[in-house]
Length: 194
Image (cartoon, rainbow, N blue to C red):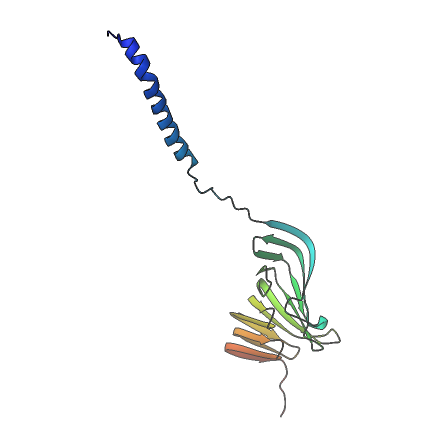
């Protein structure tokens, strides 16, 4: 039998070609089907509002123990809330209410701690609407649940008859206590006779 190379190649080539193509197809399909972790694209929610009033009652069960926040604008970015020119009113039952203000404030979405910055002030206001005293500092932190205001910065407390200056302060609205942490100095406008 005489075979020429065309006859041999035509009988051998197609099965080997089919086998090679099947092998390459199998390898490629396995490599292409391997799942690669998809690149996660994360989106951060953000929202801005102007002229806002928020009634916060998460930690309170009685209506007269609420905290109310008003602000020129509020921006939510992810879990962070930022207030511009906030005014916060904290009620404590029938006792005097507390008004907090600052240039800026921030909080997490739970609103359990509010950080006030830039000319922060606390005013204790009696039932007749008169300011009993004013506390001023560059920064204040307000623990909304426990109704505690504190700072480590320089602080001044002003009342009609006196001013107290110091470093650091803790004011507990529920207990009605005020503590200057360090370097307390009293400046009185009237000498009290005893």
